Image (cartoon, rainbow, N blue to C red; front, side, top):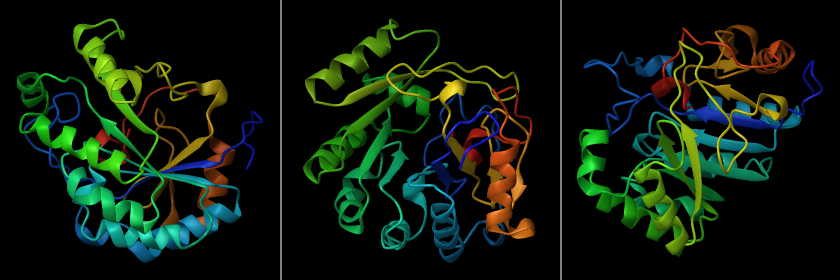
Length: 266
């Protein structure tokens, strides 16, 4: 699919849940999170049909996100179902890594190709502070399990305040170099204020080359992370929702006042 600016759209990021087992400071800014009811969230059958239709329109790269996708009940079944469509050439998942040691082997066996792990510091106390509840040793163990079962390349997503020269980012980079991981540094974003930049070590945030659209866990196709635009699959049908989203994809991001990171996946 080509949008109005001749960008080839072949990448779909799917938020499978708005739930998460961490409460990171930059994601959960208040004490309460408004969660969707279960009947609002897309079923596995709906998601599989969406991937099939999207693939026929030109999508060949799929990433599962959340919330935290590994807290989704029967996530291995969903990975297997999507893998068995035979339509996806690049199939990946972004996780905070807390449950990855347990899930790495079944994810690989179900057909997942690779993993991105969010890791903003390698200091245990700082990690606990940033995530409010997290144990960094579980993340390290999860990364080792992902390496063992061939979920590679393993990319490490590190959120920074301003640059990759910050102490925590430098420590994450050193850890990555020592463990054959690929670091990516992402400047902290703000949806409502429209703050974003190009990911260091990746293509995210590069509007000129953007090849992605997003699907929220309740069935809204979003042409841009930093836009209020969305097209409801359940109202429009899958094909029409995707076609309208691609046609409406803006030249560059602006602001998003209708989503939060736990329901759009970043």
